[in-house]
Image (cartoon, rainbow, N blue to C red):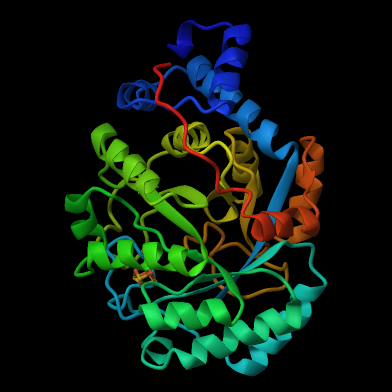
Length: 363
Ligand code: SF4
C-alpha cells in the first residue's frame, strides 16, 4: 500500500499506471480509506506524476456562462431547484452577443454554456440550438453544453450546430442515492443521453458529488459507473449545502474526500480531462485540486460578470477572483501555465483523449 512506499516506489507505481495498469476495487477501497496526511500527499504525488506525463504543466481553462437559472427539476442538493424561491435570470440574445464579444478577448480554451432544465429551452430546443450556433460563430471557440437531459434529436442538432462537449453529471451511480438526489428523474435516461451523445460524436463529461451520503462502497459504485461510460472528462465536487433546499441543514464535509477522489480519478482515467472547479473554494481551492492531479480549470467568470456559478462559494463576496487573469497569475506562481489553443484543439481534432484499454493489475 502506498503508505509504506518510498518516493522511488511511488514513481514506479506512477509509471505502471501510465503504461496501463488498472486499479482493482480493493485498491480503490484502500485509497478511499486513507486518512493520514502523509499518505494522502503520496496519493497526490502519484496522480501529479501521471498527469504531468500526459499533459505536462499545461492547464486548460473553461469559461462558464450560466445563461438560464430556471429549472423544472427538483434536485435535493441544488440551489436552483424549482421549489427554491430565489431570483432567477435568463439571458436574451443581445446579452449572449455581448458575452461573446467579451469572451473573444479572454484567455480561455472552451466556453461552457450551462442552464437548468429551463422549460423555455426544453420545450423549444431550437432556441438553445440558436444560442450554440451564435456562440460558436462569434467566438470560434470549442463549446461545451450543460443543458440537462435532452432528447436524441436535439442532441444531434446541437452537435451539428457546433457543440463539442456534453457535460451531464450523474452525481452518483448508486441508484438508491440517485433517487434521493435527483428526485423524480430517470437514472437510465441520463445514462442514455450521455451514451447517445458519445455515439453522435460529442466528447462527454460525467461527474459525481461527494459528502452527500456516499460511503466508500457507494463511491466505488460511482467510480465504476463512470468508467463504464468511458467519459472524456470526469469530475468530482464536494456537496455544499444550499439555502432553501431539502439538504440545507446537512453538515458540509471538508474538501479532503474530493481531493482524494480527484487523485483516484487521475489513476483511473490517466489521460482524461479532470477539472479543478473555482466554484467551491475559489482560486486557493484550484491550487489544491491541481496538486491532486486535475488539469483543467473550470467556472472561470470575467471579473465584472454578474452571472451565477453553480455552487457559488462567492455568492456573498463583493470581489470575485475567478477571472482568467487571476487564474493565470496563480498558475504561474505554482509552475503551471495555460496550454495553447492548438493543444486543446488537438484533443478535439484527434480524439487523443480516447485511449486504449489496459489490463487489470493489483497495486
Ligand atoms: S441540478 Fe440541474 S437539473 Fe437539478 S435542479 Fe439544479 S439546475 Fe435543475
